[in-house]
Length: 342
Image (cartoon, rainbow, N blue to C red; front, side):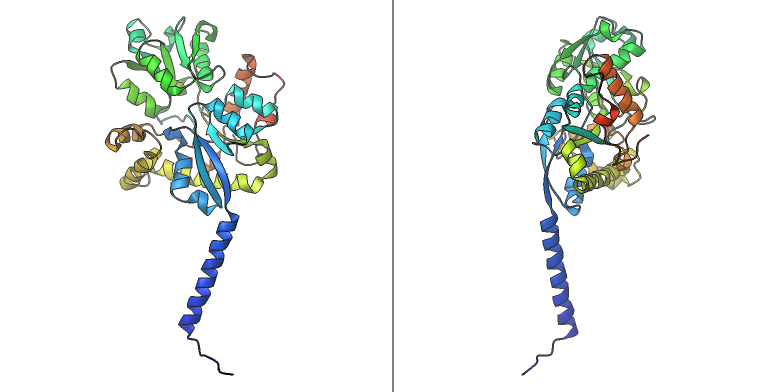
């Protein structure tokens, strides 16, 4: 029998090829297809970064985005199984679904932080000229919200109560979509609204809207958005949830370093804005979108850490307004086993 001598280089090359092919096959087999719910806000950038920079893929996740215009429809989509993970504000709808055993909050995302620009309170120029120059003047005025029981409803009520106006003396106007609220505020059909800085700052630069305050002055360390999934995922697919949170956290780290802490350098900041622009302000040219994205960046919690103290406050408010059952506990809403809380 004749043996063919194989060179060491050829053997190493063949072995490397086998290892690469095996790794590729392993990665392909391990990939889980998931749908992630999001809003086209800068505040959702951790998911966008994780997707664009391959962090989801590296954690065995094949991600597709589904975009919404408000928080509550996203919660319904999670409960129905149309969406696997969501990142948005706590709402009455989400809490009610949690009570039915459909949803669990598993982490924190966007948070108000002292020293970093956050959500602003806006009024129409018409209302401002009529004397609504501070939140103290909101009595008898209209405040735009997406739905009753939304985060906008919570914020406005906390502001009104803190100023002694009383939330019962503010007229809340549900307009379903952010775009509809913006239009109503610009035209003076509603008097006030509150929103994240990348939208607030851009709107306040125009002639029809004025900024009169900051949400952080009324709700310190407000856990603006949370990460949530189905109760089935939280209890039965722990590895999947951990991989999602790991990739999401990697995206948040990059975002914070580039645009919040600005420790990654000027080029990293520019690159991050270009990445985010693929999802936010997509109808605007980059030159016009970039300032709003840059100036409106808020902290996304490291490792999806969650301000449980504020989440409890939110739950208590929803209960006090009769928007959710008084019997629901924080443990029904939140699974604290995945991330650190404070």
